[in-house]
Image (cartoon, rainbow, N blue to C red; front, top):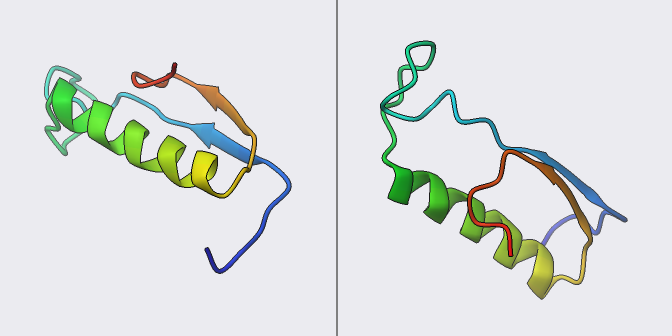
Length: 59
């Protein structure tokens, strides 16, 4: 990582989901999961705590 933040505030909305009438990106549920997993894995690998909302891949 280029940056080494103390914490990541991750507000992962679902308006990009294909069933959401407000968004236009048409991501599948698997796509949203992959997005969240990617971000959370990066943070875990860098030992950066995450404060998250609306995350499908939280564990």
